[in-house]
Image (cartoon, rainbow, N blue to C red; front, side, top):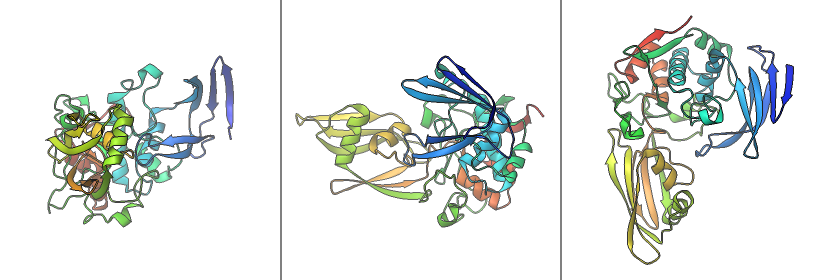
Length: 353
C-alpha cells in the first residue's frame, strides 16, 4: 500500500515522495531478498521512510530509497540486531554504522547510482520494520557521533561473531594493515570470551539477533561437506571441472584461526594432479559450500566421502563482534567501553549536532 503526497512518473522511472512520520512509515515493498548469496537468504517485506525511486535495470526493478542519514541509522541497528538489545549496544552499533557509512559511501555501488545497498554486502537496512521508541532514542542520543583515528573517520567493520578472537584487517581484505582493526582476544578480565556460549547462552541469543538471522550455533559450529557437493559448487562458482578431491590444505591462517588462503588439491578427468588456490576468507566460504560457510575459522577433518569442518564464529571477524558487544552491554559496559575494546587507538568525535 502506498500513501504519498507526490507521485512522479518519468521515462523509465517512478518517484514516490512519502510524507515522513517517524512512527508511521507509509511505503511498503514486498518480495525483497535479505541475505543475498548467504546461507540465511530469505524473502522479506519492508516499510520505508523517505522517498522511493523505481527504475528498470537489467530486466528487473531497482528501488532506490532517498532518506536522511539519521533516519537511515535508526533502522540499521535494528536490522543488524534486535530492537530488544540493550541501549548501550544500540548506541555502539549506531556509531559504527554511521562511521562505516561515511567512510565507505559511493565506493561499492557508484556505478549503479547509489551510496550503499540494503544488505550484508554493505550493512543491513530493512526499513522501519523493527524499530521502537527505544531504538530511535538510542540513535538520537548519538546523533553525529563517529569513531575516529587521528582525526579521520574510521572504516568501522563489524561481524556477527568473532568466535573468541577477532581478525586483522589485512588477513580478510588483503590491503594494508589498519591501526584500529587489529586482532584482539574477546575478553577483558576472566579470559572467557564475551561472545562465548558460557557468557551468553545461544538459546537465549535468539531474543537479540537480527530478525533475518538463523537461530543456531554462532560461537562453535560443525558441518559436514561431501566431496560431491564441493565438486558441484566449485564448478558453479569457478567453472572448473574436478573428477575427485584429494585434500583441502590451509596455506595461510590469521590470528583468529580464520583461513585466509586454502588449496584444493584434486584429480582432473585425465587423472592428473591439479590444484586451486582460494585467496580470501570470502572465496573460501563461497566456494566450499553452496550455503556459504559461517566463517573460514575451521579445522578440517577427513571423513568418508567428504570433510567435517569444526568451526568458530560467524562472519569475517574484523572489528566489533556483535554478539560479544551484546554480551558486554548485558554486563553493563557502556558504549564507550565497548567501542574502545574492539577498536584500538580510536576516540569518538561529533561531526554535527
